[in-house]
Image (cartoon, rainbow, N blue to C red):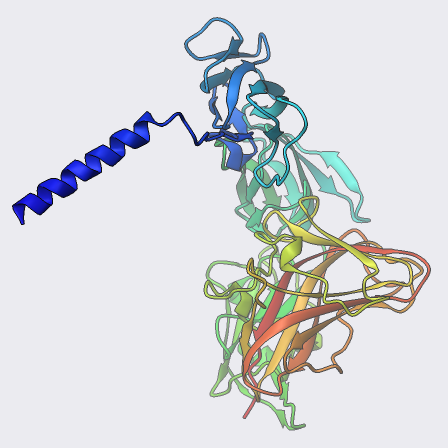
Amino acid sequence: MKNIGIFKLILFMALFMVACSEDESVNLVEPSHRAIVTSEMDFDNTINIGGHIDFGDISRGVESRIWTFPENVSSISGTDINTSSKDVVKGIFYEPGTHNVTLSQVFKGNVYPNEDSTMPDVGKELDTTIVVTVLGPVQAFVKAHYINDDGSTGAELNLSDNAENEITASKYVRLSYTVEGAPVNFVWNLPGAKPTQVLNASPEVDIRYSKLGSWDLQFIASRNRPGGSDTINLKKFIKVIPSTDPVTLDRVFEKESQTKIGLEFSREMDPATVNKNDFSVTIETAGGAVITPIIKSVLVDSEEGNILVVELDNEIMYNDDIVKVSYIPGSLGTLDAVASDAFTDQILTDFIKVNLFDDPNSNVDNSFETSDVSNWPYLWWGAPWDGYKMSFSFDQAHSGSKSMYLEFEPNGGMIIGNTDADGNNVTFPTEKGFKYEMGAWIYVLDVGAPVASNIRMYWRPSTDWSVSDNPNFNATTPIGEWFYTSVTVSFSSSGNESFMIRGENINSEAVKFYMDDLSLYKLTSRP
């Protein structure tokens, strides 16, 4: 056995020596293939002033190369010249703006120019330009103006600490900002105002002050990568003073639970003037019955003084109820001693609802933050349903930073589905026997003629082709502002459904709009 092992070893060594002694009968030819990477290629080669990017030439078959960096605004680490022949170089950039870095390569043979190239170009030389974006520091600038009673922009406010610009309770202020350094996140923090916080709104926003006192203002503009932010803090920016204007009831809504109703007034109410016996509530059920519940209490909200909380005794409200609140003339008044007028059968318009698409486990990118066109593909219905243009835009967003931009061509239309990166339908769970509210936020630029233009939100596989327009574009459609549109739907079976969004434009002019924040609310129904 030992002799056999020695023989095998000798045979192997002999074969190896013979192979090595042959006159290179096999020539291995290295292909010429361009491949260039950077350390910030996944972030559009965008950096801060003074930041650096590593550039790598990992091409095959390179005979020589020259990197060239822009003079006076950049440098190559470790050298005092702006060119290098190394395969990896570190560039440092000192001036904001867009700068070109070029790589000139000479290859050993005809070169494949791209990763997916199947045939080489005729030629051995290639020049490549890499665009680097250098951002300056984030800077924010804000302005504030009074809003006149006719809605026009009024006088500018003083934006100094402790300015205490006086405003009458229930009046509005128009805030605006400009920025430098390309921030993408914007936050207004506005104690004492409605709303108290505004996230990623358009550069101009209107807010209302109803709570007496002096209030601060904060504005934050920021970007995530490359990092940067600017914060503006104004102490005692505004002082809300009493008003002699009539107090108005602005909203009736479900507050905190199915037993509480919120009454939102235009300014703060005086707790000493509240008497539950001055209020009444009626509930009209979907079945036609009318219920008159007993009111347990009516109190001024502990955090928002312009809200009264009406609590029902042994009765709850459902989404399919029509709830009405009335107030007979009594003692109710504001903190600035203005009596409230009576009101009758004011309808509760805002029930507490949870958008099922906002669930972290939902697969639907309802605010389009991670969507691209491939995730909302054309479903091949043929003409006229292919007469549309669709993209994702940063120009307008109801929330976040993106929205879907749509154009329906003249006499055109649209039919799109919703798929993941692998082409599979993105689904959402539904239950038979329940009603749902399906909606979206719309920002219209142009409604065309307008005649017979609409959107319908279908779903598959258990499609209900009878769903209503959502919305219908017509002469009363708001232009240049976000509005909410919804329809009530039900599903014929329990399971997983996927969107089919259909648009129709039966007129000779294009319809142009943004869509954002798709919603699906499961509604409660009275048993």
